[in-house]
Image (cartoon, rainbow, N blue to C red; front, side):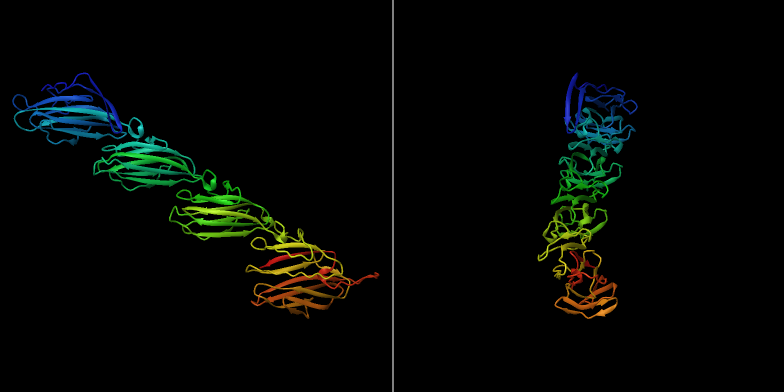
Length: 568
């Protein structure tokens, strides 16, 4: 039967969730629209029609068709009129039925709604059907065809990464249902930023629907995904990039069951490792952040960001101390590694569990000046306290000389302290002696577990020359477990030696003309030995009035150098 327009010249703006469109209402059915082939073309609006099985040509169904563009959605709201019950059907472009209403009596309504994906479009169909009985049936229906507005932009967010909708940090509305299975979003991430993604689903979504979120790298490989969230719930996804990873990332929303509306929130958080405003370098050769000096620093490691390198300047002979603590942000341990200026690893901490601390300490020598490095590794937050302190060898800031050519001057009859350890294996000192006098040096190692020994050199720093046939030799020997004996030999022959309370003496040692080799060997309670070798050259004296013999080999001449060296 001929239909009638439900309204003429009506124009109405409709807003529903994340969708908008402009409706125009006109139209009705014609006598021949009883099949897909004869479907009447309509546009969004309000329509009415009549079906007749009461005599004359049977008119049990009226077919209509309408165009739907990519990413749009449509709704058909059908209402039963006077007469027999009616119901409404919707078919896709392949003329396959996809939606069916209940049977609607007079005044009863039902809405059939369908959403297309980003790449779907075509001609869809709606038809009204009356019950198979004698009589007539009247009906009305409204057709809405609306654009999605995913992320506040007209149309559907892309269904693939290649058609992803570009967004920046913020909160966005979206919709998934029917053919619109996936919504892809793309966003730029600077190197070293933390990606925070979260979504919530509408509590008004169908009870059988759930949604989830998945994150993809710039190479479009999946990184991580959330669990499914039912209506009214949400999920969060966090990913940490490194100093070398960044670029365009992708977020995919997908649904299961009946889908529905969602809100997606994107936030990017720059790292601030050690106050640098960014992520610390992931490699020792990639210009790590230069720490300004002593202080407490913090950082964060997770996901792509597996290592953080820092560099710091060390002055000659400084003591490097770092107190390291694993944070509580993650349940995993972290480890710290220290590197010398040559970028070789020299010390590392244990793997520290959350909340656990450990101190690393190292003594640099004079050759250790330069840029040192610290590496943190492991997925967790961390803090470290860096302290660089000068040695005070002989009560002067800095390390005493590492070689006999560069000794630190000291004075007689004074008390001095120094430090040896790690790279700092030798400290050299020099003092002025007086010809004909005896110099006694009392040297002790009072801390640590390593043995130490002392060398005493004459002014030429390589033995001495005397013009007497006999000399007296004296010295001290000590270590942490106690020295039990000292033996002296001259050119391989044993020399009688007295050792008492750490001091030893060999008197009236006869020298031959020319070079004499003296070897002193100390043995401790643990059976360890330490040996010192010295050369003394005897030259027959030329007649000189007033010549006074020297009694101590180590005291001959006007200048001396003293070295303390850790025993290996």
